Picture 1 (spheres, one colour):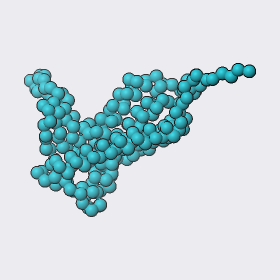
Picture 2 (cartoon, helix red, strand yellow):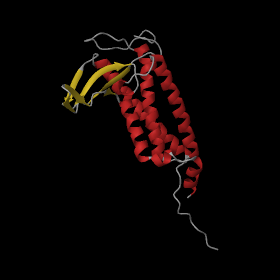
Picture 3 (cartoon, helix red, strand yellow):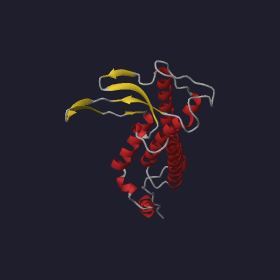
Picture 4 (cartoon, one colour):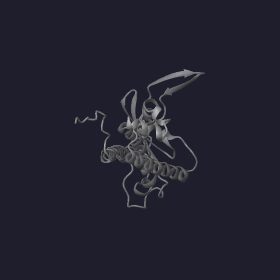
Amino acid sequence: MSTQTSTAPRKASVRTYGLMVAAVLIMVLLIDQLIKIYIKTHFYIGEDYTIFPWFHLRFIQNNGMAFGMELGSKLFLSLFRLLAICLLGWYLVRLCRKRLMSLGYVATIALITAGAAGNLIDCAFYGDIFNNPYPPEVATFVPFGTGYSSFFHGYVVDMFYFPLFTFSLGGHEYTFFEPVFNFADAAITVGMAILIIGYYKELGATEKELEHRKER
């Protein structure tokens, strides 16, 4: 009696999915916070350091979402981020347990989640642990609760500025790319781009379709 050996690829284990998600979350959050803390404690508000003509470090703070966009009050923004992170966290747990999506897809969702969490840390804690002096003074750590604002009312720290080129239109001069952003913003943007470009088919698939693909 002969036996047949399956040639179907083995799916990664739940442990592998979980470790990969943890690695992405820790790496993005660590890099993001190290950069922000360095900028906040070494640059004064508005300080601009030119690395290349097309790449500056420019320290600004904002109340808004990615790339400094505004949406409602400060507390609303912070609570919105918290809700989004909770939903993304629930989705990641579900993805890891079911293993219907590829590791790459799950890593992309983890990248977006980490970016959102990075900016939430600023909002939640920076107002409690930093002062906010006027230029040319730089911020310093203070005892918890004695900072420039209260819990969930801190500012998001931005620093990456890419004035790639300028152009004139209608008698006015414009710079591309104008927004100043941070590493967490970049993680969210890259993650969303990967989802749209690389996983558009998976985004539109039902769970039954994904289960069928897994069995093939």
